[in-house]
Image 1 (tube, rainbow, N blue to C red):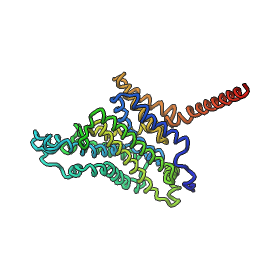
Image 2: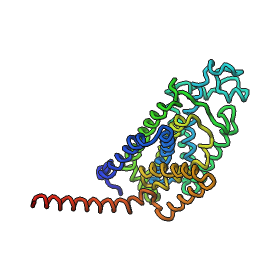
Image 3: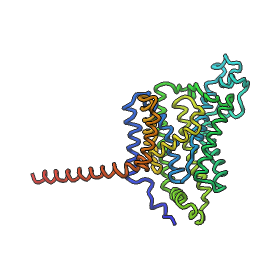
Image 4: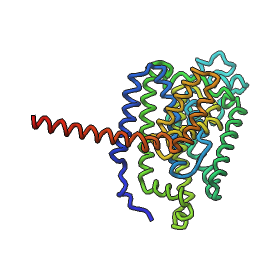
Length: 379
């Protein structure tokens, strides 16, 4: 039914060049062309790209549309925010509070001791573990509950959307433990290092870009492995894969959990980049935005997801600055154009138009170079 894994290379020459171009753009071109503020803004955009890359695996290749990726993005961000908030809430810094040594929003809500589930986040090592583990375990619970009951398609998408709404309401309702609608704010240092300085913003941008490249390479490995081909087969003919003896439910749970873990890393980096985390990044709207990033870039292209995220967020920032009252219409028009004009996203547009034009240009250049060489030889 399936070819051996040796027949598909980890990365073709074309893909290697594409990865190199993206790396050059992120690590050379943008840092040299943008000031610190704009570079930090691009860094924030790149944190969303983690969720879009996860959706390429989960939805593009696995056929599992999740409208709740903001949940995992937010959980990763909240785990990082809890550690940062505890670091800035030492007894000396909070001595004016009625209960020193706890976050300010807890003191405002008459909580007199640190809740037990906050205690482990004094440890940076545990925090790094929790950033990946907590969203992955939550995704595993959802996956087992849904996929073992053969629930998928539109029903699964609606349920993940409902989970995003429920978690948002829960976070806002438990204000004394989560910071409520404002979230966890005023995050200043990481292990004593001021994350608000210009130097820190540049360093965090490079760390963010490096982690994104790691996520892309991991996703590329999954895509080109036997697992990736099984995911595509499941997406196209799930019954046939099931009848062939594969545990379809286990594969779905795995790719859903992997997408959640990748999104969570982006959420943690978002918290470091902007210095806060709130429920507005957990709910339905950010989750749908992440799907739009994936659609604009091309839901079958890992690199397209990154470019789509950058394009949509750049357009959102530009439209909102130039046309404060009309930018939502511009963003909606961009999404409609993608669906109607190039349904395969930026990646499909590149494959169908840009790449053939480049190839014709290269052929022309080679012919011109050969002609010049012949003239030089005969001269």
